[in-house]
Amino acid sequence: MTVAIDIGENASPGGGRMLVDLEELLATRLLVQGNSGSGKSHLLRRLLEQSAPWVQQCVIDPEGDFVTLAERYGHVVVEADRSEQDLVRVAARVRQHRVSVVVSLEGLDAEQQMRAAAAFLGGLFDAERDHWYPMLVVVDEAQLFAPMAAGEVSDEARKVSLGAMTNLMCRGRKRGLAGVIATQRLAKLAKNVAAEASNFLMGRTFLDIDMARAADLLGMDRRQAESFRDLQRGHFVALGPALSRRPVPVRIGEVETQARSTSPKLLPMPETPAEDARDLILAPLAPEPARLRAERRPAPPPPPSTNDILAELVRSRPAAAAPPSPEEVALAAEERDAMIDEIVRDLLSDPDAAFRSVAVLYQDLLVRMRIKRVPGDALTLAAFKKRLSVARAGVEAGAIPEDAWARAEAAATDLPEDIQGVYLLLARAAFEGAPCPPDGEIARACGSRSPGRARRLVQYMESRGHVVTRADMRGHRIVALPDLGIETKAGDPAAWEEPQEGGGDLFATG
Image (cartoon, rainbow, N blue to C red):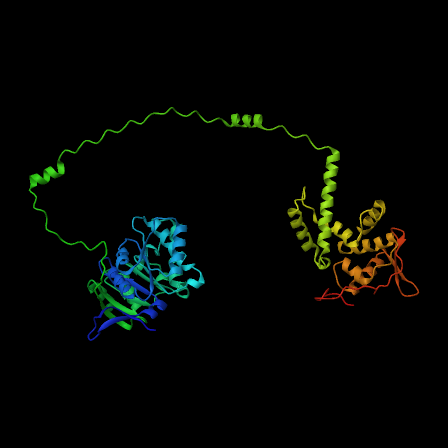
């Protein structure tokens, strides 16, 4: 549906009415320039009144001139003297409920106006995707919120406000926000904000730099730029896809509402005799009411010195607790070791735990230790690897004498860390008089699913002199451990193999 709104009269010969394609305006944005008194606020009011029945509107109003739209067209006036968080929440509700608003910044200083406008525009911009309805966002005196150079306000306020204006003009279209910005001076407006507008209404201006920029935007030459000085109040030159394909003069039509502040009008001077005027001005002033004398309070005592504060802290410090006895320390260490062993067993109870890297298992252990509130410092990686090798070997507490198992752990230290668990697995089988573990179980002890990798590890340990293998009459494997003086019983290497799901060891060959 195409909606054309009437903003006035095409002042060129035979021009007729000046219509604005509202849908095209929403897609291409509008820039209005005019010196103070040129009629740009009147133009914005005409545009707002004509488009109010068709599109949601938001007016950033630095002077409070547009609050009169509320009574006639139902705009909600949002006073900006509130926190930035409140303004963001109000803006989100405005987009959600599709209510037209006038954000009145009257009474705030320049920096407060910039922060409030940035917060409200940011709330409109960051609204949820489901609430991206079309909205006409009109910013009067845009040079205040998107200045070309730093002024008297802080750099932080300027950056926040300029960022919000840039988002409105550069990225707002996809969110349904159509920026309409008006400025007294194009030279004072940030170029990246002004450059995003495709429609222009240029009013009366006198400075050469502003006339030159306006002429460049409208595609006019330098001589034609002089015509901006001759424009009357309420007369503009229009160009853009929503207005006209060629620059045309426009006379803005009448409005139905009035601003609270109007141009000054000449009034006759009062006919007061000079003597009466003198008495009115210089009459004795009424005496000011006597001020109550403030009650003088005694001076507070001087603050205590640092030495006094330290001495008081020493006196108030509680007595140190008695150190724990050796028996209590040993008991706490045993409890801690038991808790860690339980966590390691829980880790390995997961069928896939045998095939995870040591680093992943170690991080999982640290998380579980914090969850179970294990006392003392975190277990080191080296200590964890040692416990992991013992756990993967499947040694139950008390099943093997401690001195014998200590000799097995000492013999395994000469091997790489990823192979120590395989050696301890063979040692456990030898100590228990059990058959030699099959290749699948050996592979699982080193974190692999490849029987070929298990056979190569046994061959590697045999080449280093840590084990000696032989086969019986049936071809079953027997592994002797010379450092411990024990050997396993004969076991079938292919008796048990882990099903190879998900690829296993990519570098292993059967």
